[in-house]
Image 1 (tube, rainbow, N blue to C red):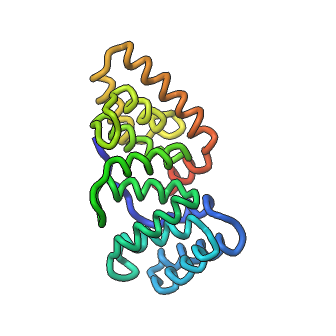
Image 2: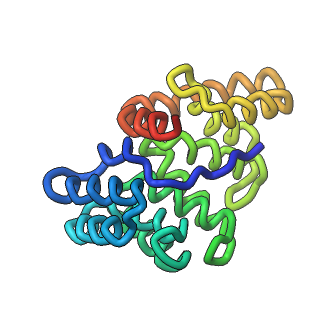
Amino acid sequence: MRGILRMGILSALISLGGGGQAMSDTAKGIAAYQRGDYPRAMKELQASADKGDEQAYYNLGVAYAEGKAGPRDMAKAIAAYRKGAEGGSPLAAFSLGQVYRKGDGTERDYSEAAKWYEIAAKHGDYRASNELGLLYVEGKGVEKSLIEGFAWIYPATHASIMDDNALKNAMQLASMLTKAQLDEAQTKGRAYFDEYFEPNSETVNAILEGQR
């Protein structure tokens, strides 16, 4: 039921960062990374992060996790993701959730994974919403609830998103629910979409664009 995490610095996502010089440095860093100029990329991204751009921290985390700019260093990746997430980046929060769910560079902690997935989901990251839903289905880090699980997966199946992994998960989960349970789950899911995803359409669209 799970999809594969797609790692990579996505230029479409710089629009979610700050403004001014910090955003310019982040854009330069991403461009350098994409053409393989890793020393320049890390310099520009670090400069942007030092100016407080949470998206630069996210991209630094990706770079450390991928290990293209130097030896793979998950301790530095996690630290960068955390700074980005605490600064308001849903992408960094999602990445932290992935780290804790997998136990990649740290102890596996489903409660922490659920925490960061929920933060990311409430800021429009539908990938995090899908993953949080699966944790509810599995009862890992949260109290097991098929209804709550479906409700969190549901927003990623909305016509404006149509995430393949979420669609598969929702179809499988729907077969496990009674009609009354499914009605309740869909109602909650629609409410989650209206509250957390529709107002954050910029984040949704940036992630969709970045995954193309």
